[in-house]
Image 1 (cartoon, rainbow, N blue to C red):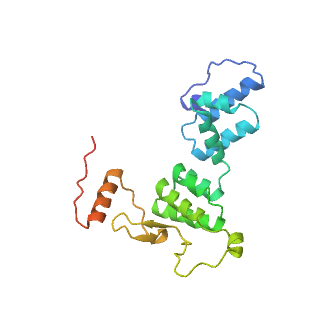
Image 2: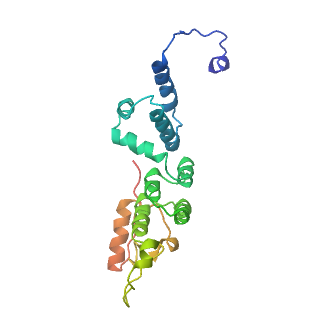
Image 3: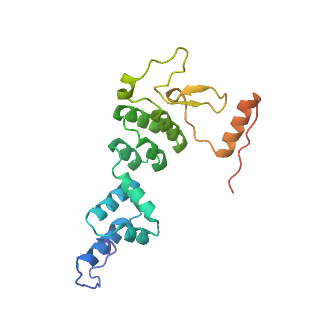
Length: 207
Protein backbone atom coordinates (compact mmCIF):
# COMPACT_ATOMS: atom_id res chain seq x y z
CA UNK A 1 0.00 0.00 0.00
CA UNK A 2 2.79 2.41 0.91
CA UNK A 3 4.57 1.64 -2.39
CA UNK A 4 1.41 2.38 -4.38
CA UNK A 5 0.93 5.65 -2.56
CA UNK A 6 4.52 6.54 -3.46
CA UNK A 7 3.81 5.79 -7.14
CA UNK A 8 5.81 2.56 -7.42
CA UNK A 9 4.32 -0.22 -9.53
CA UNK A 10 7.13 -2.71 -8.89
CA UNK A 11 8.97 -3.15 -5.59
CA UNK A 12 12.01 -5.46 -5.26
CA UNK A 13 11.78 -7.93 -2.40
CA UNK A 14 13.21 -11.17 -1.06
CA UNK A 15 10.98 -14.21 -0.60
CA UNK A 16 12.25 -16.66 1.97
CA UNK A 17 10.81 -19.73 3.57
CA UNK A 18 10.71 -19.48 7.36
CA UNK A 19 9.92 -22.01 10.02
CA UNK A 20 7.41 -21.34 12.79
CA UNK A 21 10.05 -19.89 15.11
CA UNK A 22 11.32 -17.33 12.60
CA UNK A 23 7.78 -16.39 11.60
CA UNK A 24 6.93 -15.83 15.25
CA UNK A 25 9.93 -13.54 15.71
CA UNK A 26 8.89 -11.52 12.65
CA UNK A 27 5.38 -11.18 14.04
CA UNK A 28 6.86 -10.20 17.37
CA UNK A 29 8.82 -7.35 15.79
CA UNK A 30 5.82 -6.12 13.79
CA UNK A 31 3.47 -6.13 16.78
CA UNK A 32 5.69 -4.88 19.57
CA UNK A 33 7.60 -2.07 17.95
CA UNK A 34 4.66 -0.04 16.71
CA UNK A 35 5.03 3.51 17.98
CA UNK A 36 1.32 3.85 18.80
CA UNK A 37 1.06 0.73 20.97
CA UNK A 38 -0.71 1.62 24.24
CA UNK A 39 0.32 0.06 27.59
CA UNK A 40 -2.86 -2.03 27.53
CA UNK A 41 -2.16 -3.31 24.02
CA UNK A 42 1.44 -4.05 24.94
CA UNK A 43 0.37 -5.95 28.05
CA UNK A 44 -2.10 -8.03 26.06
CA UNK A 45 0.45 -8.78 23.36
CA UNK A 46 3.08 -9.84 25.89
CA UNK A 47 0.61 -12.11 27.67
CA UNK A 48 -0.47 -13.67 24.38
CA UNK A 49 3.18 -14.20 23.47
CA UNK A 50 3.75 -16.13 26.70
CA UNK A 51 0.54 -18.14 26.39
CA UNK A 52 1.43 -19.23 22.87
CA UNK A 53 4.98 -19.92 24.03
CA UNK A 54 6.33 -17.76 21.23
CA UNK A 55 8.97 -16.40 23.57
CA UNK A 56 9.86 -16.76 27.25
CA UNK A 57 9.95 -14.03 29.88
CA UNK A 58 13.73 -14.01 29.65
CA UNK A 59 13.67 -13.67 25.86
CA UNK A 60 11.11 -10.87 26.01
CA UNK A 61 13.20 -9.02 28.58
CA UNK A 62 16.25 -9.29 26.32
CA UNK A 63 14.25 -8.18 23.28
CA UNK A 64 13.01 -5.04 25.02
CA UNK A 65 16.27 -4.43 26.91
CA UNK A 66 14.24 -4.55 30.13
CA UNK A 67 14.28 -6.68 33.26
CA UNK A 68 12.22 -9.83 33.72
CA UNK A 69 10.41 -8.00 36.51
CA UNK A 70 9.31 -5.39 33.96
CA UNK A 71 7.93 -8.10 31.66
CA UNK A 72 6.01 -9.77 34.50
CA UNK A 73 4.64 -6.41 35.65
CA UNK A 74 3.46 -5.55 32.15
CA UNK A 75 1.83 -8.96 31.69
CA UNK A 76 -0.04 -8.49 34.99
CA UNK A 77 -1.69 -5.34 33.60
CA UNK A 78 -3.66 -7.48 31.13
CA UNK A 79 -5.58 -9.02 34.05
CA UNK A 80 -6.60 -5.73 35.64
CA UNK A 81 -10.34 -4.83 35.81
CA UNK A 82 -11.89 -3.73 32.54
CA UNK A 83 -12.79 -0.18 33.64
CA UNK A 84 -9.18 0.44 34.64
CA UNK A 85 -7.81 -0.90 31.35
CA UNK A 86 -10.20 1.32 29.40
CA UNK A 87 -9.13 4.39 31.38
CA UNK A 88 -5.46 3.64 30.72
CA UNK A 89 -6.05 2.92 27.04
CA UNK A 90 -7.85 6.25 26.58
CA UNK A 91 -5.09 8.05 28.52
CA UNK A 92 -7.48 9.13 31.27
CA UNK A 93 -5.25 7.85 34.09
CA UNK A 94 -1.60 6.80 34.27
CA UNK A 95 -0.44 3.22 34.69
CA UNK A 96 1.19 4.09 38.02
CA UNK A 97 -2.05 5.60 39.36
CA UNK A 98 -4.08 2.68 38.02
CA UNK A 99 -1.81 0.09 39.64
CA UNK A 100 -3.15 1.04 43.08
CA UNK A 101 -6.78 1.01 41.98
CA UNK A 102 -6.34 -2.46 40.47
CA UNK A 103 -5.69 -3.83 43.96
CA UNK A 104 -9.08 -2.70 45.26
CA UNK A 105 -11.29 -5.79 45.22
CA UNK A 106 -14.68 -4.18 45.88
CA UNK A 107 -16.06 -3.62 42.36
CA UNK A 108 -18.55 -0.89 43.23
CA UNK A 109 -16.10 1.03 45.38
CA UNK A 110 -13.33 0.61 42.81
CA UNK A 111 -15.60 1.97 40.09
CA UNK A 112 -16.30 5.02 42.23
CA UNK A 113 -12.59 5.66 42.76
CA UNK A 114 -11.81 5.17 39.06
CA UNK A 115 -14.40 7.80 38.16
CA UNK A 116 -12.90 10.13 40.78
CA UNK A 117 -9.41 9.55 39.42
CA UNK A 118 -10.52 10.34 35.87
CA UNK A 119 -12.51 13.43 36.86
CA UNK A 120 -9.81 14.93 39.10
CA UNK A 121 -6.61 13.68 37.45
CA UNK A 122 -5.50 11.68 40.49
CA UNK A 123 -1.80 10.90 40.78
CA UNK A 124 -0.20 7.64 41.90
CA UNK A 125 0.32 9.22 45.31
CA UNK A 126 -3.39 9.97 45.65
CA UNK A 127 -4.51 6.49 44.57
CA UNK A 128 -1.96 4.96 46.94
CA UNK A 129 -3.68 6.80 49.79
CA UNK A 130 -7.06 5.52 48.58
CA UNK A 131 -5.73 1.97 48.49
CA UNK A 132 -4.27 2.28 51.97
CA UNK A 133 -7.59 3.54 53.31
CA UNK A 134 -9.45 0.68 51.60
CA UNK A 135 -7.11 -1.89 53.07
CA UNK A 136 -7.80 -0.58 56.59
CA UNK A 137 -11.53 -1.23 56.21
CA UNK A 138 -12.79 -4.25 58.14
CA UNK A 139 -14.14 -7.14 55.98
CA UNK A 140 -17.87 -7.90 56.49
CA UNK A 141 -17.16 -11.44 57.75
CA UNK A 142 -14.89 -10.01 60.46
CA UNK A 143 -17.35 -7.26 61.39
CA UNK A 144 -20.08 -9.82 62.21
CA UNK A 145 -17.99 -11.51 64.91
CA UNK A 146 -16.08 -8.44 66.11
CA UNK A 147 -16.39 -7.11 69.66
CA UNK A 148 -18.42 -3.93 70.15
CA UNK A 149 -16.47 -0.74 69.52
CA UNK A 150 -15.61 1.08 72.79
CA UNK A 151 -17.37 4.44 73.32
CA UNK A 152 -15.41 7.35 71.91
CA UNK A 153 -13.26 5.22 69.60
CA UNK A 154 -12.53 6.90 66.26
CA UNK A 155 -14.57 5.47 63.40
CA UNK A 156 -12.84 4.09 60.34
CA UNK A 157 -13.95 6.21 57.36
CA UNK A 158 -15.83 4.37 54.62
CA UNK A 159 -14.48 6.90 52.11
CA UNK A 160 -10.69 7.40 52.00
CA UNK A 161 -9.55 10.59 53.69
CA UNK A 162 -6.48 12.71 53.14
CA UNK A 163 -4.98 15.86 54.69
CA UNK A 164 -5.29 19.13 52.80
CA UNK A 165 -1.88 20.44 51.72
CA UNK A 166 -2.81 23.98 52.73
CA UNK A 167 -4.68 23.70 56.06
CA UNK A 168 -3.65 20.13 57.02
CA UNK A 169 -7.23 19.27 58.00
CA UNK A 170 -8.59 15.83 57.06
CA UNK A 171 -11.28 15.59 54.36
CA UNK A 172 -12.93 12.73 52.42
CA UNK A 173 -11.24 12.43 49.02
CA UNK A 174 -14.54 12.98 47.20
CA UNK A 175 -14.64 16.48 48.74
CA UNK A 176 -11.11 17.35 47.61
CA UNK A 177 -9.74 18.58 44.31
CA UNK A 178 -6.69 16.94 42.75
CA UNK A 179 -4.65 19.60 40.97
CA UNK A 180 -1.32 18.72 39.29
CA UNK A 181 1.37 20.51 41.34
CA UNK A 182 5.14 20.04 41.18
CA UNK A 183 7.10 18.73 44.18
CA UNK A 184 8.68 22.12 44.93
CA UNK A 185 5.36 23.95 45.12
CA UNK A 186 3.89 21.19 47.31
CA UNK A 187 6.67 21.81 49.85
CA UNK A 188 5.94 25.54 49.76
CA UNK A 189 2.23 24.94 50.33
CA UNK A 190 2.95 22.63 53.25
CA UNK A 191 5.22 25.22 54.83
CA UNK A 192 2.58 27.91 54.41
CA UNK A 193 -0.12 25.64 55.82
CA UNK A 194 1.98 24.86 58.88
CA UNK A 195 2.95 28.48 59.55
CA UNK A 196 -0.39 30.08 58.72
CA UNK A 197 1.39 32.71 56.64
CA UNK A 198 1.16 33.77 53.02
CA UNK A 199 3.55 33.40 50.15
CA UNK A 200 3.75 34.15 46.46
CA UNK A 201 4.99 31.35 44.23
CA UNK A 202 7.02 32.71 41.33
CA UNK A 203 6.76 30.45 38.25
CA UNK A 204 10.08 29.39 36.77
CA UNK A 205 10.76 29.83 33.10
CA UNK A 206 11.44 26.65 31.15
CA UNK A 207 14.91 26.56 29.59
